[in-house]
Image (tube, rainbow, N blue to C red; front, side):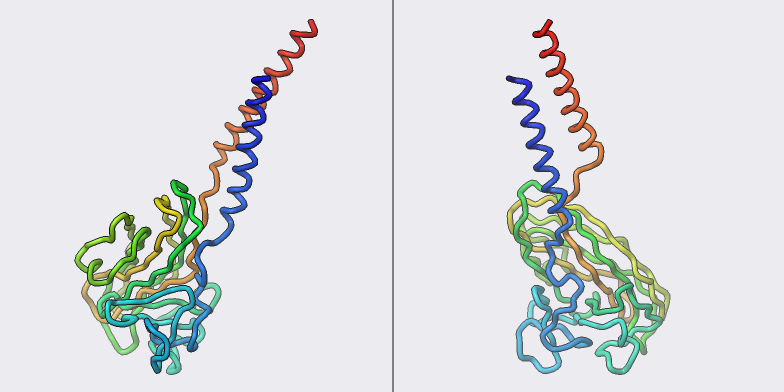
Length: 257
């Protein structure tokens, strides 16, 4: 009877893990490719609706303490043309060729944030995003910049500028990207892991970097998913189930003898 209970418990854990694996494929970030906007592409991102020449990003907020900050939604197919609010030198498009988020870390950068709900307290989550570094047309100067990523409370730009974090917030940095004058870094992918302390937390991005001529940090394809169980975990679980089954067979054989 005891062996049967153990086997049933292991089966329940296996079923739960399988469910978690399916949940791991669900992106908890909404509008992570920045396609959903209120007032078109190639515009500065606002903080409130109705401002001429600004657009809002669905499910995201952009705020520098006064307005949306010097942040933009640009499009890979237009960013080198006069139709774009900001034109970038030597730009190469990301894989999907669509919209992306752009922030100048040296001029009123705003914090890009989204509230993430449905988290499991103590659960591990994997964040991935594509990013690049470019320079605005008409300017020169080398730059080195990176994304500061925060998971926890609501971050404020003026606090992050002096190294102050919100309470109960974890901060991590992407690898820094460097370009020569007029250069473009090419698109890179960053992967980070975070542990949820609450069922709802705020995911934030803040552009940071060195002094230099106007750089723009770019961001696209943001994804946050529950971590998938390691293959070794599955192996140990299946091995345990096999051992329990073997012991049960031996016990039945001993009774028949």
